[in-house]
Image (cartoon, rainbow over all chains, first blue to last red; front, top):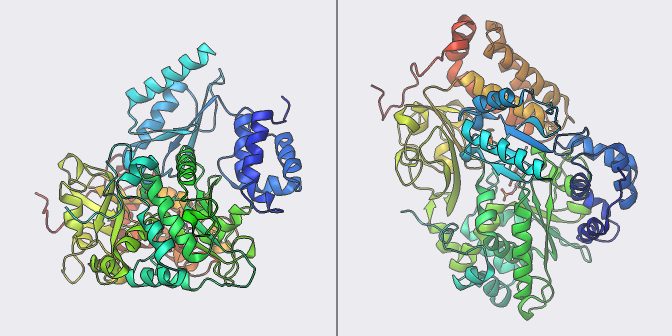
Length: 166
Length: 450
Ligand SMILES: Cc1cc2nc3c(=O)[nH]c(=O)nc-3n(C[C@H](O)[C@H](O)[C@H](O)COP(=O)(O)O)c2cc1C
Ligand code: SF4
Ligand code: FES
């Protein structure tokens, strides 16, 4: 994998940087890391972090500091679909435990692990601001809410189908 | 039906679009503010309205605005705090998702009042689809002349930029948010200097919550005095409450702050009662950081008076017998919920979210989680309860930012009101793995359990 933005990604990079005053391009770091993660297989190896540093003309350490601080940046490879299931109080009292157990069971993985086919990663996360629609999980950019076992089955089947088509 | 100032139009089809929003009377406050008022008179109206920050702390907005420094030649910034990550809170998401133009309208007026030509919305990274909604709305507003250069020909320039965070609750704290906006770790700054003097890029900055900024729209439209007539005492205007947990109708509700907690939980207009006809056990009325209250202290104060959904009434009795309105994240627990387990998940949350700068917070949150984990899993001892109490007390007030307090309070309140449930867990290590302490004497005094 080469860690270089293509033209579309570069255009987006420029748009992100343009939001900040001259000389304050470091402010774009978080959004640029999101862009890099989306562009490079869902995770950020050191090469990707170094590339971001060079683009923003800052020291690599300034990027590492940030990438390790925030929970959304994956510093290890992840599956194609990451199931980020919320386990905080409001979700817990609304039944998130049984959803987490169910996902572990049907995918045969523990939190932090990826299925052998590389499709699914299970991650337990803290409150995602969907407490009223619990239990819930985030998959990529979207929230899957009011989860039931049936819904989990349907979601997994849907992603398997999409993955098989590609 | 109570007064609706923010969500009145939320169900109008197509309200997300500029065209429909404008047709429904949107952006009038921008016309009024920019053409008929000046920054000082806007701040005056906001002061008169009595509006208090909706992000959790309840600080008077008009007063906060009047503190902003105005050094010659230095740009000032307004930053909208859309980091919304306090467990139980999901109201800002609702506003941004369904009424993006209401937020923009409030932001334009507020930017004018504060002299911010570049205003930033810092939104939690997980709300990944909302920046698209906001950016589309920004483009529409720009095309209509309400954003960009020389707005409505008044000479005022304003651009609004949306920045996604990276997943860190601490970035909701305003100085951590500013650090994060500068592309750094979300480590809160030591105050002073306050953001109003040196904030974003060391420039004078005001950070306000999404709901606070949306509330500027009705305040300008109706005038501060009229706004202040809604509500009661120092709880003026309306408040969004995001209700969740074991209730029939979880969701976001706009209330005027005169209704009782009982009405909010049991009436069909709001939560619709406890799910499955169960009994109410406890409630965290203002987001995970505020003290949990057992049913008997939730519906009535210690003095036996009705408790209302407002700043003063919810905090009546202080931390001994009261709680706080906080962010409006209203978490309801029914008779089957375990207080120890609930407290454990919150302790884990704060341990996970501590930025690690101050040792009482970094170490204390980890210890509290470990001890609660032991108790929850039948391995606790009686002295653990006192140890927990001791740790939380040593965190509170000894840290750079209020996350330390926010981590200490839920643990303190759980022990204060539910000590015998903790003791029961410790005395019944096996039984507590398969059954619950239940209601015992924390009965809801109005809806008396059979
Ligand atoms: C740990 C922590 C998290 C916070 N999270 C948020 C948040 O997500 N949204 C918010 O508006 N305010 C949050 N606040 C409060 C902000 O620091 C600040 O008081 C608020 O944004 C001011 O806006 P307001 O006066 O309009 O409420 C948080 C505070 C702390 C200490
Ligand atoms: S109290 Fe906790 S979160 Fe706040 S600055 Fe200190 S360590 Fe960081
Ligand atoms: S607790 Fe799960 S989304 Fe808030």
